[in-house]
Amino acid sequence: MKALLFTCFLVPWLASGSAQRSNQDSQLIPGSVAGRELGGYFTDQIALKSRRAKRALPPHADMADEPDDSPIPEGGDATDLPTCLLCVCLTGSVYCEEVSPDMTAVPTLPKETAYLYARYNKINKITAKDFADIVTLRRIDLTGNVISEIEDGAFSKLTLLEELSLAENRLVKLPMLPAKLTTFNANYNLLRTKGVKATAFKKLTKLVNLFLANNQLEAVPQFPESVRIVHLQNNNITEISADTFCKGNDTYYLRPNLSEVRMDGNPVLLSKYPNSFTCLKSLPIGRYN
Image 1: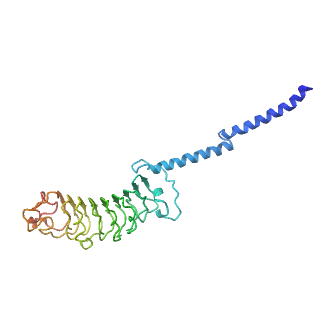
Image 2: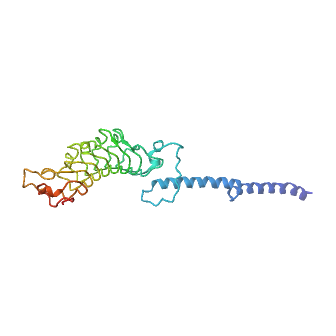
Image 3: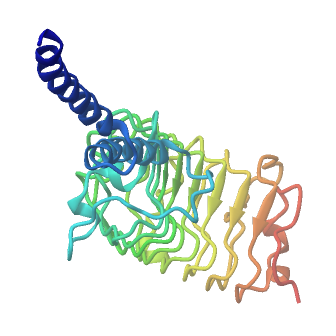
């Protein structure tokens, strides 16, 4: 009788405990409903970390075959998204190259930005507010945009800026440039002499490289003694004077820093102006016959 009672109570109790353990174990068994839910959670977390890691990589990292899974608002443009979601932001550097959807304005930059690369976008204008609060900038590269206008004072607060590239845009005139520039590139624009003030470069006493090729300049602009390389090829320069590179009233004047002057692709016949190069250590590259 006791054996019968023991069997009636013990067997159901053991069966219940086994069912509970089976239910708990099923949460970790691949293929079970609970297992799939838990696996999905970890998959989402891994994907999130992967996306964050990709955004932290420098631009030379090989990510050409990786899908872009950043959320893009339908019908919006790049200005609708935070800068460091659209671009790669490293310490002091922001890379916004060929952004999709189209970037049509200079993005809002982190306060500590020193280097901005925003090449090959659709930026069409630079306003006085774009860089007003980013006084740490040392290099700006806006090559390959569609910039046709730069507001007065757009670069006035950039006292540390050393390199500025506005190449391959649609500029017809230049704004006032920062005093500490060492390299300025405005190749492939629509610049004419009337759009470049006589003192635009003269006061840039640290300028070393000046690139103004493939524009519509009719005359050689004035530039400081510090310049070593000047590219003026493929413009509309028709004449030069004794004071263009040298000082016509000083036959002893020398300009040893100026080592490369390119004027090929201009209408000017350089052989007509032999006294214009007496201060240089090498003749300009251009048409002599």
